[in-house]
Image (cartoon, rainbow, N blue to C red; front, side, top):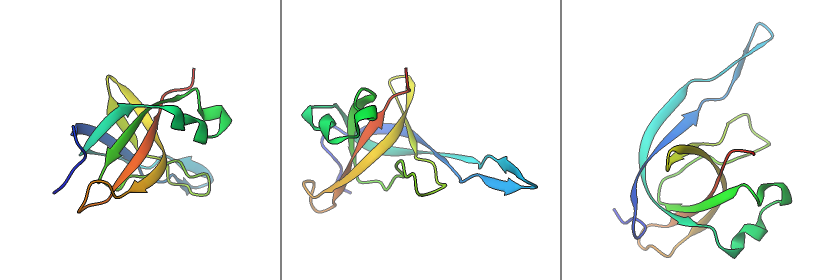
Amino acid sequence: MSEPLGASSYNVRRFDPNTVVGFKSVKGSITTFDIRASIQPVGREVFDLPEGLRSRVEFKMYTTFTLHVVNNMSSQASDELFYDGQWYELMKAETHNAFAPLPHTKFYLIGPQV
Protein backbone atom coordinates (compact mmCIF):
# COMPACT_ATOMS: atom_id res chain seq x y z
CA MET A 1 0.00 0.00 0.00
CA SER A 2 1.31 3.44 -0.93
CA GLU A 3 1.26 6.13 1.76
CA PRO A 4 2.30 9.78 2.09
CA LEU A 5 5.99 10.52 2.57
CA GLY A 6 6.97 10.60 6.26
CA ALA A 7 3.78 8.84 7.42
CA SER A 8 3.46 7.74 11.05
CA SER A 9 0.74 5.97 13.06
CA TYR A 10 -1.95 8.05 14.76
CA ASN A 11 -5.01 7.21 16.85
CA VAL A 12 -8.44 8.32 15.58
CA ARG A 13 -11.74 8.30 17.45
CA ARG A 14 -15.07 8.18 15.63
CA PHE A 15 -18.37 9.13 17.25
CA ASP A 16 -21.56 7.31 16.25
CA PRO A 17 -24.53 9.64 15.71
CA ASN A 18 -26.62 10.56 18.74
CA THR A 19 -30.05 8.94 19.00
CA VAL A 20 -33.25 10.15 20.63
CA VAL A 21 -34.80 7.88 23.26
CA GLY A 22 -37.94 9.08 25.04
CA PHE A 23 -37.33 12.74 24.09
CA LYS A 24 -33.73 12.58 25.37
CA SER A 25 -30.61 12.73 23.25
CA VAL A 26 -28.35 9.73 23.93
CA LYS A 27 -24.71 9.98 22.87
CA GLY A 28 -23.51 7.45 20.34
CA SER A 29 -20.64 5.11 21.10
CA ILE A 30 -16.98 5.91 20.35
CA THR A 31 -14.81 3.73 18.13
CA THR A 32 -11.02 4.13 18.06
CA PHE A 33 -8.64 2.93 15.36
CA ASP A 34 -5.14 3.65 14.04
CA ILE A 35 -4.24 5.23 10.70
CA ARG A 36 -1.03 6.08 8.84
CA ALA A 37 -0.70 9.75 7.95
CA SER A 38 1.75 12.60 7.39
CA ILE A 39 1.11 15.73 9.50
CA GLN A 40 2.58 19.12 8.53
CA PRO A 41 2.28 22.74 9.68
CA VAL A 42 -0.32 24.87 7.89
CA GLY A 43 0.87 27.34 5.27
CA ARG A 44 -0.95 30.12 3.42
CA GLU A 45 -3.90 27.88 2.43
CA VAL A 46 -5.46 28.55 5.85
CA PHE A 47 -7.09 31.60 4.25
CA ASP A 48 -9.32 29.26 2.21
CA LEU A 49 -11.18 28.37 5.44
CA PRO A 50 -14.12 30.26 7.00
CA GLU A 51 -13.15 33.34 9.02
CA GLY A 52 -13.98 31.93 12.46
CA LEU A 53 -11.83 28.82 11.95
CA ARG A 54 -8.63 30.38 10.64
CA SER A 55 -7.15 30.99 14.07
CA ARG A 56 -7.92 27.40 15.19
CA VAL A 57 -6.30 25.54 12.27
CA GLU A 58 -2.98 24.16 13.42
CA PHE A 59 -1.92 21.37 11.05
CA LYS A 60 -2.71 19.69 7.76
CA MET A 61 -2.65 15.93 7.36
CA TYR A 62 -2.28 13.66 4.35
CA THR A 63 -3.61 10.09 4.42
CA THR A 64 -5.14 7.39 2.22
CA PHE A 65 -7.71 6.54 4.91
CA THR A 66 -11.36 7.61 4.64
CA LEU A 67 -12.30 9.82 7.59
CA HIS A 68 -15.32 11.90 8.62
CA VAL A 69 -15.08 15.71 8.63
CA VAL A 70 -17.27 18.50 10.04
CA ASN A 71 -20.65 18.46 8.28
CA ASN A 72 -23.39 20.78 9.54
CA MET A 73 -25.99 18.95 7.42
CA SER A 74 -25.47 15.60 9.17
CA SER A 75 -25.83 14.21 12.68
CA GLN A 76 -22.49 12.43 12.17
CA ALA A 77 -19.73 14.11 14.20
CA SER A 78 -16.31 14.57 12.65
CA ASP A 79 -13.50 12.19 13.52
CA GLU A 80 -10.80 13.35 15.93
CA LEU A 81 -7.09 12.59 15.70
CA PHE A 82 -4.70 12.38 18.66
CA TYR A 83 -1.49 14.28 17.93
CA ASP A 84 1.15 15.72 20.24
CA GLY A 85 -0.90 15.04 23.40
CA GLN A 86 -4.13 16.63 22.16
CA TRP A 87 -7.29 15.68 20.21
CA TYR A 88 -7.86 17.58 16.94
CA GLU A 89 -11.09 17.74 14.97
CA LEU A 90 -10.88 16.96 11.23
CA MET A 91 -12.05 19.68 8.86
CA LYS A 92 -12.24 20.21 5.09
CA ALA A 93 -11.12 17.18 3.10
CA GLU A 94 -9.48 17.68 -0.33
CA THR A 95 -8.62 14.71 -2.55
CA HIS A 96 -5.19 14.69 -4.21
CA ASN A 97 -3.56 12.21 -6.61
CA ALA A 98 0.12 12.93 -5.98
CA PHE A 99 0.83 9.64 -4.22
CA ALA A 100 0.08 7.27 -7.11
CA PRO A 101 -1.23 4.61 -7.43
CA LEU A 102 -3.53 5.47 -4.49
CA PRO A 103 -5.11 8.92 -4.17
CA HIS A 104 -4.78 10.57 -0.77
CA THR A 105 -6.78 13.19 1.08
CA LYS A 106 -5.62 16.41 2.76
CA PHE A 107 -7.43 17.28 6.01
CA TYR A 108 -7.06 20.30 8.26
CA LEU A 109 -6.73 19.64 12.01
CA ILE A 110 -8.69 22.10 14.13
CA GLY A 111 -7.48 22.69 17.69
CA PRO A 112 -9.75 23.39 20.65
CA GLN A 113 -11.47 26.77 20.86
CA VAL A 114 -9.61 29.16 23.15
